[in-house]
Length: 190
Image 1 (cartoon, rainbow, N blue to C red):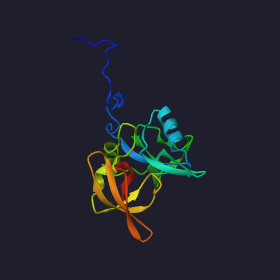
Image 2: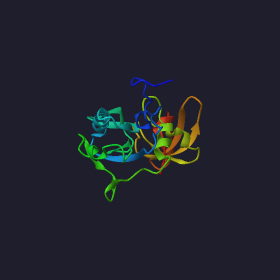
Image 3: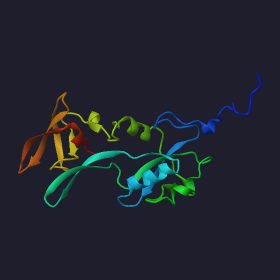
Image 4: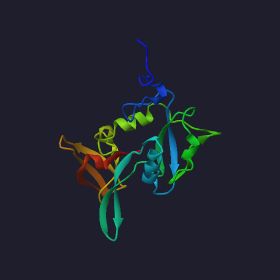
């Protein structure tokens, strides 16, 4: 059967990957260094140009005027990931994007992220784009509090339950004080 001009098969370059972790042939994840506090702006501007991005986020406790509030913040401040095929995409336009300082380079080419790292982060992200690292914390191991009044403090994970709560032992006033919090507030101590 002869093909007509309106029944042209799409070329591999025109096929859009199905999910955020799925990369097309030739694509790799690269790191974008952003301006201070401009991760979200850079992500929106890059997506408006047709680039696929990934910005891992976490909950962060902010103290201001004696009040605590929990906000979504970048897991890697001043960095986000962009999927690029260096032979097909106009990757130099990334450096001129609002909110972007530059791509992380190796000599005169953007340096790709090793395979599996970004894919693992995407797999550990929930529907709101928040990293869920609570699966990597273990009982009797040190953790770092990520949110709440003790954000940033090191503690020892004492107990976990199925309802999403953890009990940690926080070193205060020369003794171990038990504190109960949600499991997403406990990050593995590095």
